[in-house]
Amino acid sequence: MTDRKDKKRRRRRSGLVDVFNGLLTLLVLGLLIAGGLFFYGVSQFYATGPVEEEATFLVERGSSLGLVASRLESQGLISNRLIFQSGGLAMRKQSALKPGEFRIPAGASMADILALFTEGKAVEYFITVPEGATSWQVAQRLNDPTQNLTGDPVAVPPEGSILPGRYDYFPRDDRQAVLDEMQAKMSDALDKLWAERDPDLPLESKEELVILASIVEKETGVASERPEVAGLFVNRIRAGMRLQTDPTIIYGITKGERQLEGGITASQKAAETPYNTYVIDGLPPTPIANPGIEALRAVANPTDTENLYMMAVTPGNPSDGHYFATTLAEHQQNEAKYRQQERAAAEQAGQ
Image 1 (cartoon, rainbow, N blue to C red):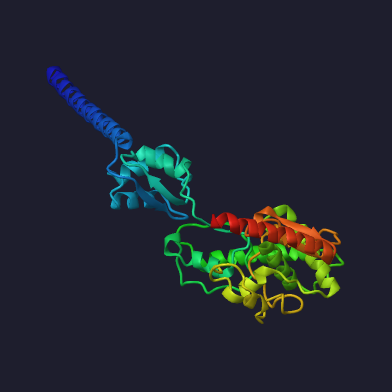
Image 2: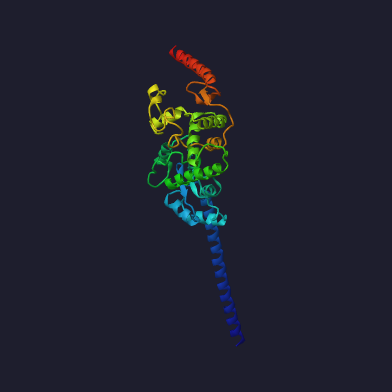
């Protein structure tokens, strides 16, 4: 009887040992498989990727790590989305993705791509509006298909409604939204400058300030001259004199849509257009360009000067500045210098 009980105990223990050994074997096999999968995943995460030549990829605003991984795999830029996503989670990068368009170099690993999206620099998209650019020119830039903007082409906005400067945007942004930002910046800047303007300024509205600033912008290529030129034009307005500035003749002919070929002719100077300040009194009906912030400041707070006349120092080169004069006699002397240089330049060109 005792022997029979002992045999049962031994069989029970043997069965438990077998079960334990089986479980242990399964655990070891599981660990080996998990370890193998882990090392395989790590090796794939850092291995050279399938990108054969530089490619671009757009990380949309608000994209999750899983969505980015899926799109990368579908575009053939990584070999396995689960490995990419697991790597990102393991490195706690799921909330560090930067929106923007990125250039992925040839052979980039998943680790390289993740680092690029979380620590790298996206391709910059921007439009720079130069000081003195016309609204027609700005519309041309916004409607250029190479700018990576979307939406219907924008209409030419009112002249002088855009503040020159750099405008960054996200790839595939709406072009009208970019234009709205340009105009909002001008409106904000103009409100501030109008509130801080010289109290004796002989201008009746913000619109007139922009008109005169656009003339100052186009009249001189020397930044330091702007307040002096603005002061001169303010003196002319106070004295009831015509502004007599060449850029207004040019705008009356071209409307800011092209360059004027050759110099201004006598017939163009005498032509009656709404913009020709040699013919009209006061300011033209609209700005002739989009003035920059410094030209706007110059008109809002011009230099206190007695000058009424100016003449370019060098023919055809406004970046060399102007001669200024308070009397017509002084101006005629400056004009004689200018004509002498003009003749000398013509003689040299003919040699």
